[in-house]
Image (cartoon, rainbow, N blue to C red):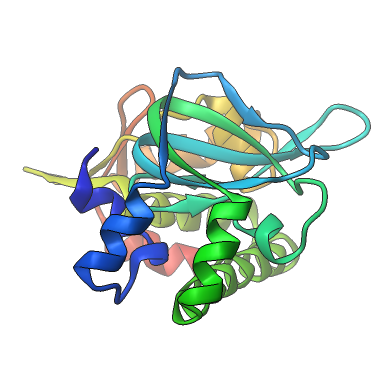
Length: 225
């Protein structure tokens, strides 16, 4: 286990070493390849996950088959925690975007842990609040922002998780297909590609397969407003 990555999750915030070791002993590692589904929307949730490496997308599918991506998560982030506070069906499908290792924690193990360490619940609720805030912002963007603005904002958001400095900018290896990137933005693939092509022509980004180099972050931030 990569302790530094796993312990950066909100679940372990402010724990002392003894508490950390006890909770780590309850984690079960799971390796999963790109395209593998960890759980489906509508299934009953009985565990949360901490990402040790790789990337996971959370998405919902409409009755006519269209998919919307709610988030793309990376190392140190959690998902599946909603079912611990509101037992019921999963609200999204979790699919591996880049080969991943996650650490699973069962519902009963966590509930027992929270009973003796109630302060941990505060950090889990903070993580849920951040997720809700991002969801609210995404809904507002769909109403008030045009597609290029949403593309710029999505690239900047992905850069906070997966960006790595390179000589001429910030390289963001998002590992998303063109269709998945469009689902994340909430627009058609053609419209998103047109926006990316425009950004590239202006010298703001450089496309590299399933990655993009942000060459002018300031311009992208202004376009995202």
